[in-house]
Image (cartoon, protein in one colour):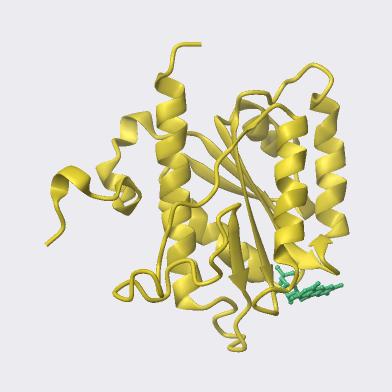
Length: 205
Ligand SMILES: Cc1cc2nc3c(=O)[nH]c(=O)nc-3n(C[C@H](O)[C@H](O)[C@H](O)COP(=O)(O)O)c2cc1C
């Protein structure tokens, strides 16, 4: 039985986290065929009621206001030809207007990607997102999930063994788009980002 004193905080369900202090987390993503959207929604579920997904193809002024007010921004793009998709890069370059006055500095940041192959050169996409966040002065949060084979009782958790961000693989089952294991890893990632945001908020500035 798990020792409660050492329980993994990222296992907390959103309703356990205190709805009155739900972190405001924006999750901008691009998705050509729905895979990245499925992961964005799972991260949002894990992050709790303060999380909002934003499809950058249809971004509105209200979405920009949500991004500017958010405590955390979780960037999501499919991996296309070994990097982030052009349409997502367009969003990033539009948001870079905020770079000069450091408008997004000190927000928590994280990233996720989806691709067909287990590697798929996804790491390159996550590096691109992390460097973008660094240039914006943001505080990057990676994954903290160790699954099998280190913990054989935790199959399916972070199967990619990627800690810079979330690296999911698209499913051949196109009714599902992304495997259940990767979606569960995404929910855990969302919970971790919410916890990190709370901790960062509590620090004196
Ligand atoms: C232009 C293009 C480039 C792609 N490049 C890669 C790649 O480098 N590695 C990979 O594993 N999959 C690659 N794929 C597959 C996509 O990453 C995969 O289909 C992903 O699930 C798409 O997510 P989406 O439906 O959110 O757009 C590529 C797909 C397209 C359309």
